[in-house]
Amino acid sequence: DAGVIQSPRHEVTEMGQEVTLRCKPISGHDYLFWYRQTMMRGLELLIYFNNNVPIDDSGMPEDRFSAKMPNASFSTLKIQPSEPRDSAVYFCASLRVGNTIYFGEGSWLTVV
Amino acid sequence: QQPVQSPQAVILREGEDAVINCSSSKALYSVHWYRQKHGEAPVFLMILLKGGEQKGHEKISASFNEKKQQSSLYLTASQLSYSGTYFCGTAGTSYGKLTFGQGTILTVHP
Image 1 (tube, rainbow over the protein chains, first blue to last red):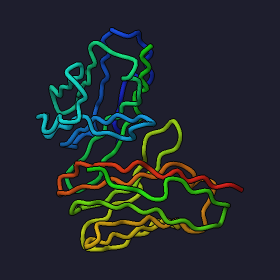
Image 2 (cartoon, chains in turn green, yellow):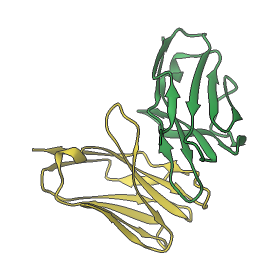
Image 3 (cartoon, rainbow over the protein chains, first blue to last red):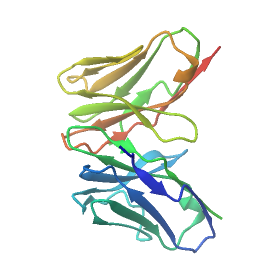
Image 4 (cartoon, each protein chain N blue to C red):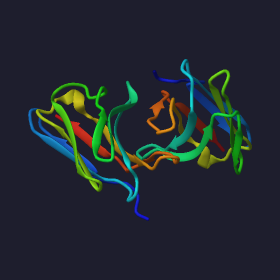
């Protein structure tokens, strides 16, 4: 089975630009998570969905961040406008209840 | 609330043992252990459910003390491939939302 698929793997963008990160969860998994990883803050949960419905977005840092899951096989995390402090690795992960979380390879974002 | 891992870093020589601890202030349903190598995604090692069980995976095993809300990861006869950052993720309920500790950096030298 394919794992969690994320794109792009690497993105360098200028401050103020819109960034869209994409994720395809593992088929059959009903939970999807967006995590952000930085040296200073470690792995932070930004938002998670259950059956395509956002359950908890309390980790989203501010209104510049938004996430959607229009169907069971696709989710996006959008940052608009982006700022240098948004530079991080963004992981998408999915889970089926009773199992554990499986991470994608991550999207390495650099905002200059 | 983020679980606390200790130690923050460990340096070993091949063949030596190590223990990494994970503590939570909240009641736990499960503890999940991951290893992450530089530039890669965290990789699942094992999951422990409340009930105080111990699990093993080759020379890596873990325990979960439900009463103390603590878990420990045991690495025996370490190999170079064990190097990486180890994270514990904790869940307070069965549906699996994980909160991760800050990580323990393990370095194994020849």
